[in-house]
Image (cartoon, rainbow, N blue to C red; front, side, top):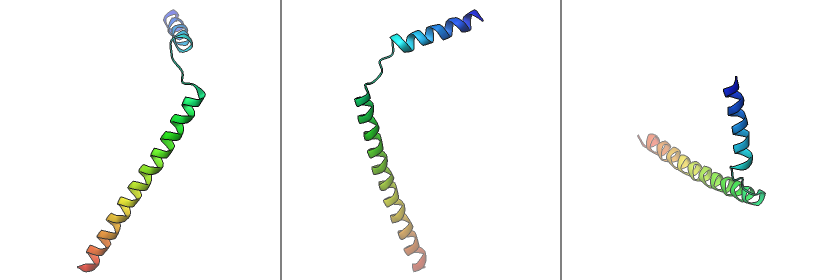
Length: 63
């Protein structure tokens, strides 16, 4: 039981004193960047999917 208590105490101490947390502004900027990149990636995958769908439909109709 003492090992668990020591582990928890050291973990809390490390999270408070040794971890460098980003500022709120930095966190906002990173979140916006991830959101924009995700939207661009989703649009790109959607365009590729539509192109494949149309090309396969054309191919199977031409048979």
